[in-house]
Length: 338
Image (tube, rainbow, N blue to C red; front, side):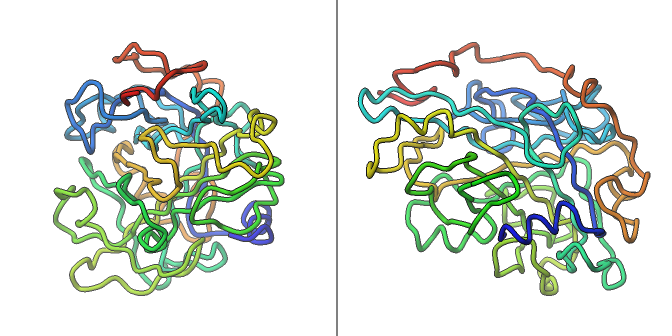
């Protein structure tokens, strides 16, 4: 997304979905979608959302949750990505990169992510998609992933439409979207975005690869309009998007001029190609469907969803099930051999 589009997104009169913040919930090695029941999972994740998050998550997550770090008080879903680390160019040690707030979120949001549910096929924020096609909310038990840590080439990464980076000069000046990590320090941090597919097969809440039950018809990066869903995946669902701001500025002075990118993902991804994200649906009752049924709305579903102060959201926690160091300078990435 260009910087001009960013400003329009944040300040123009808009419609067609939800945009809200979720503070960070926990940072640990659990992944109930890809590695259910495995404690610990293979690499560290940054997780936001409801307190039903666990190593194994089945059934109606929304009914089990009792609190959430999201501004939308009826959203007990969980959203997570890998964690970004800085690798010291001289001694090879690692330090976790902190997450900071995105622009135009509710006061008190602590790190976390910006979450979007937009009413594609009109995904441009200015047109009412409901006039063209009904949007079906995700169902209890639904889960999906986007991207893959195994992606290792530029050609393959370019195929993952909507998984991109921005080298920020400010939160409102993002510059061009990049397929890989930037090759120079960023003045205001590293911005990552994950757009999920929005066409469902109408049958499966998951699939063996956690992706095949969904289909992406968008062929360009950014918030763009979507072509029709195919017959194999005929059900139009909300376009789910995550945005995360990593405060890489704390390490700019340690990046020697002309040296290669020193940032790595927690799965030892030394390029940006393997960026990926996981989603576990957990909205309470029909709350998400109510919001998707609202025309000419943005941010809060025109009052269709109960909101909470972020001071309340920030009190939501989950237990650390792993008990390993993910902070400070580390000799190796958690879960990775030296």
